[in-house]
Image (tube, rainbow, N blue to C red; front, side):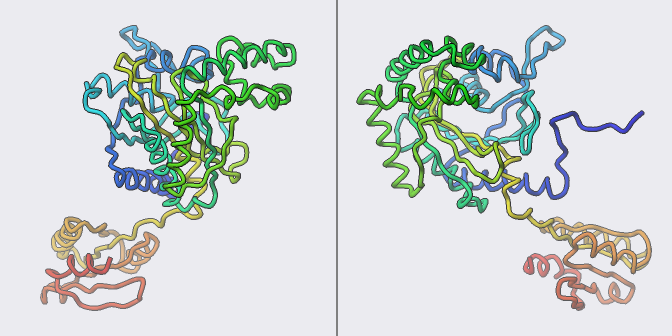
Amino acid sequence: MSQLQPPRGTHDLIGEDARRHAHVVETARRVTASYGYEEWATPVFEDTRVFSRTLGDTSDVVTKEMYTFPDRGGESLTLRPEGTASICRALVTNGLTQSLPRKVFYNGPMFRYERPQKGRYRQFHQIGAELLGSADPLMDAETIAMGHAILRALGLGGDVTLELNTLGDPESRAAWRAALVAYFRERAEALSEESRARLEANPLRILDSKSPQDRALLDDAPALDGFLNEDSRRFWDGVRRGLDAFSVPFVVNPRIVRGLDYYSHTAFEFTTTRLGAQGTVLAGGRYDGLVAEMGGPQTPAIGWAGGIERLALLLDAAPEAPATIVVLPMGDDMTATAIAVTQSLRETGLRAELDLRGSVKKRMERAVKANASHVVLIGDEELARGEAQLRDLRLRAQRAVPLAELPALLAAER
């Protein structure tokens, strides 16, 4: 059998990659908790209708990218391509729509069949946050500010730009949509084949087309600003004032759209120039119709998701591997004591390893390679005095320490 490889578009998280990944998740978990968010976990596969009903039958995700399969009972299941729909489904099926607002943080793998690129995989991972049950534009600003705080905590604040847009309320959006359809229909022959197919089903997607022939038509296309009613203008003004209050800089980009009907008002992306064409690292928007699509009541909501792989690539350096303490018994009759010492260190919350194999010289060499901070040496003479020799590999110093005091002393030195 030839050597097995991971499936195309997947990757293993080992060593530095695993530390980068964990650092992104732990940072996001810490920051969202400071904003009052609780962590939820949903299944990695759902009833296919969770996504086909909410993402839209004409979206690229549904038509081209979902991993959908029948289970042995004949039910159609789909590996989740994104997290928001699953969170909204969980809100409804767990009977939580009567206890709003809910602030939810999540992280985990998502799955899309697409062409793998740098920082973009078929199994990829996201952090995400959803604020369910608030219609206040100030909460849109706070939710965006929380994403900005995570990026700053990761050391990326100077590498990203917040691009912001409004999609208006359903009334404004419908009027704008009608004007766009009329505009593009008159120029249908100049559109790409893909955009001609989108013209009737999902015309807003034409606005983020990468086709040169489509983009040549965009400058003269009707702008949403001309169709915003008073309620939409007040909301848009409130979001921008809120971001100013949270000291989050932004630029307005009218090309940011969300092609699904349940999106409204706020849409945003944090982008960077450090990842080439795949420049969006965290993005989201307001989706006041999604919970209702799941069978729940009409529920205002806003959220965002960020790609862990892309964020991990942007980190200047991987977090250092955690230092360990290695316990070395010098003689077989020291093994029981060494085990007890190792366990006492672990129970104190320290990272400790027991090494019994080979000469003391070889074991010391392995301790250095394992990034050990200290080595605990236990021999006959030390045991008779109730002590151990503690060698600090960072300071290259060694001293005798009473065994009973060892856990507290090492904990204090961390």
